[in-house]
Image (cartoon, rainbow, N blue to C red):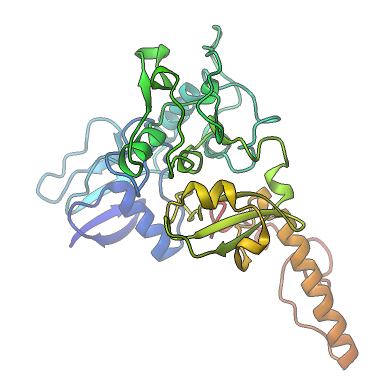
Length: 356
């Protein structure tokens, strides 16, 4: 085990751990929020990371043996920790300024499609721009544009939104029987495309939707049906011969609008699911419902969950009133016994992810 300090928090990690992984360990163990954002790194996929540069950090001290600082910010997803290393992320103004510049580059060609994009409300680029970006842009030239192409009946490709994170390419390389798409051309002409207009139709191809951090790859069966914050995410499972069968159902009333893999707090799929579960099982009778998905309070997806919570509190209050006792509903904006304004500390978000 080796010792590393990130934003004044020290932790011991196994040798070979990257700075990003160590920062995530600190967040999980200490409840901190120091992990850098990552748009291309995906822990379930090999050789990811090093493309988007949003996870850059400042290494203030290389190690106990060599305490010299690294001369420039490094990508935390590709840099292993060394014993005695000291890293600055949120506590470094230089890193925050550099990251804002990276975000500006990512948004150079990204269109303002949020009002019509199905990824709105759960888009990593939206969160990144809000938390680390700047209000304006210095880019004055024409944005790049790509002609639409058809890559199959289930997945819709909008190349204008792509940030070339390579996640979808890694998925098809590592968990599907044969990859038929990739990155063609070079420089600002690079684009995700299929080979000779092939269609992406293998059993696990739908996972490219889950790993895409923006709205470049979306579910054709869900397009324009509903905003994500009008749906209720529910965890469910079924016996499946191809995959684990553990999914997240996005429901509106009794209707299943879409099926996705279950995402963790870092926005990564816990387990990849097959196309049968994703696209063909759209009835509640097909699933064993486990219960509502736990959603972080800061996310717009939690809107309907607040309504459920209010209903539960209201019923509990009625029961206690019948018993002649005053209900103890705790603190917060949902407590009917609270008087006056609710402080910002009571409603402060506990994390930067959609999912707890």
